[in-house]
Length: 152
Image (tube, rainbow, N blue to C red):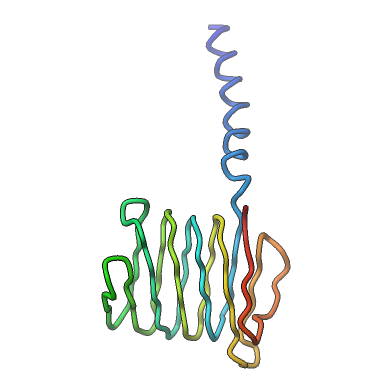
């Protein structure tokens, strides 16, 4: 019985350390109510919504995660790895894997966890939205195309 309790205590101490080590390289990205262009190339998870947009998703390996898009009016396959979705009030989830998400539109909000790059352009729109990288403060979207890294 004492061995079992000792083993349970050691496992209980090891699990948080393993989880922390596994996620030490993961970063975060948050985009709130953006208008313009948002491009995320990341290995991780991306979840979001767009009020009105054209969303292009490139998924080079369909076996390393899942891509789910809901609410699109039209879907166009551009090849075996690239799909474009058009519509209003779309929701998307890119769960795991190495994906590229390119959104041009309005009302874009998303969260990402993993490691990657984000390119943003507020398209010269007043109050074009905000973004935060790696739990930093929210900043306005740049009015010129800029790329930032997160995670890693």
